[in-house]
Image (cartoon, rainbow, N blue to C red):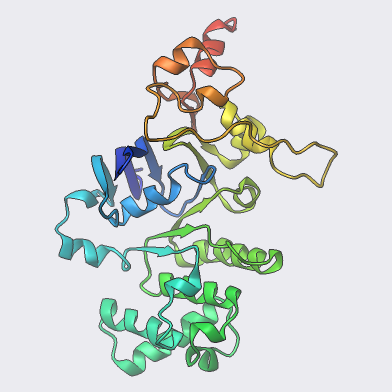
Length: 328
């Protein structure tokens, strides 16, 4: 089946006074229809830049250097801007990290949602208001009539995030991208937001891309996981496989860094730091942090290899180990 979203060979660069930063380097990624995909990695790994590229919101000094981003078969990078505006927000929506800054402080939140119904679906004011109240109820906001009249500063962080999710779903998008949707929320509210996303996917039929640095969040929400490091995609697998059989040394380090309460285990931080992307090495960008590094890792970028039907990894060490293993 053709993926809903298919990214191929995507490169994104940013020009700085010190030189060119290679923020996203040749990633290939697909999102299936109705799928919840987790995009994980440390800060600075290129997750949010990838999402902004899908929305075609990379602004100078950044630029998309090459690649294709196909949504329902159409390359978004080739669409005229007026057509892209009809895709952005209507067919693909985004939930941002900081809901208070994303919401307009000068308008009641209900009016902000109603504007989307008027703009994208041509609803009259009364119908837009009715749908707004329905959507606020769908995302679990009590007393929607009263909340719709309030401003962002009058709402808690968790309620603001629910409003952002309501805005993202108001136009019945086929793809929802949630960029660190629980940032800044306390643990109990964050859990409620994640439960909401888990329920809304099947109810609305939307595919979801969840961007996070927290693999523990991914374990309970996602169908499949893509792991990014320093702008490169290093591993992609269904969620069970990734946690049971992580193949890339970076993925294994991420898994070991997850706190565990079900058994005694020492939480280990990921060693080293993300390398500077100003003068990115020609090979694997994890090489200087990797305990399994080979000479070829520093010289040549590894190509993805298939370990199973839905499991790919880009790692010279894994490839060498497979080649050396006795055949059955």
